[in-house]
Image 1 (cartoon, rainbow, N blue to C red):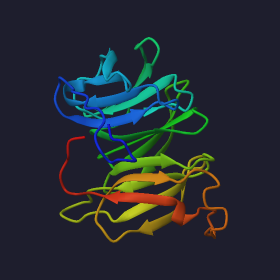
Image 2: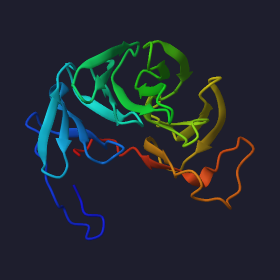
Image 3: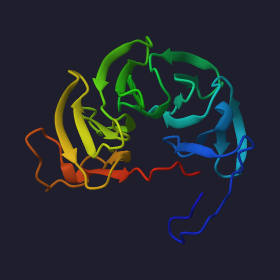
Length: 232
């Protein structure tokens, strides 16, 4: 973990299973969740640097973790092709979501916590009902979906593309209406592959002009795919 003011590392957490592939803070900042090799999912106390709880269930690399906005639930995506929903307080698996046909690389909760968006290399983004565990919508994602993010108001879902068919790379960010499942806009980027997307907080840019879809493109950021996986 880094001090953003000094840009120096203030604490180093060691994952016994190997490389850490994903990390996310709980909304209150009191818990850090990590995902890594061999299905490892851990909850850490960021102040002490000690493991609070280890969550057992995944059987392969965990590449994405996300807390529900209320902090009570954790969603994880794995190369074992499943998504798991965990009770943060007890470490118990609440639901195992099955439907993806290849490894997962992204999970994100909607702002109201009722929907979970998941993406992977099976060319599909799935929207799940968190309460029932059922798929609400399946969105096409040519070239896979390495990243997913909801806008602060929950009315837009952004997805970032990865590897496309053949040797080409997908160079787009797609904006969706999560209720209807329709694509609102496709944004072309210069660099091939987008491995992370994020919206700025609501109201951060009140004077910027929005496009016809209602989305402020300047409030969306993405990072490119670097052709290899790096350790977190």
